[in-house]
Length: 217
Image 1: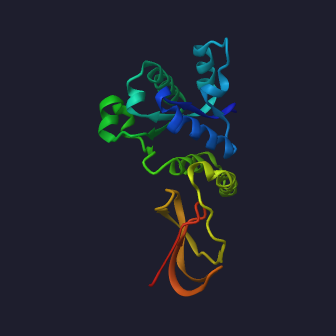
Image 2: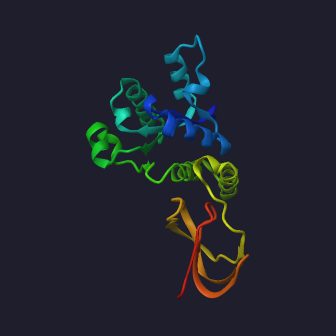
Image 3: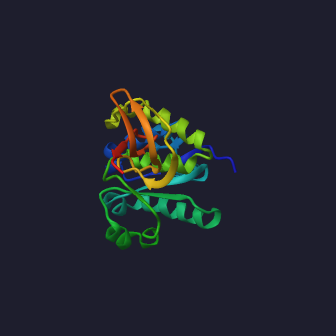
């Protein structure tokens, strides 16, 4: 099925300023199509019908789970609809934990406690990286979207990495400690950056955020 939107953003209104609005902005800058209420619902529209249309026409539901979310009825109704869609069509719900822990999720939404979730504890970059990895069907598509995102990261304090040229060796399944991306390059090789040449060292490099670490064997 071809969906009009990649992501339906489900959240409590109290989380708009710190999470939902900036996250919707970053998703768009990464060339993703986002259903976000402030940008879709206009004066005179039926809120219920607009939301139902968004739910039906979105590939995934990105659910910002917070104490505000659990305290409100409307977001819970959106979650119910997404759960029904997941039962009938497969993986749909993408949980993001905002200022909650596993105990909170078990208490308010135990069925979601078993799902792998991304937290906002380290900002929105790890959330974005996980979404891009899920929605990209090829490595090149992922890198192009990540590049588009990096070019617009000033809003969350992204600092561009130094230009580095080297033979990075093999990509591993390790998690980058800086941005949370799964898969960094690791191995033994010489490399040169704009400051120095280092020989015969063990290195790790993340092509997404530019993190790299060099250490003696």
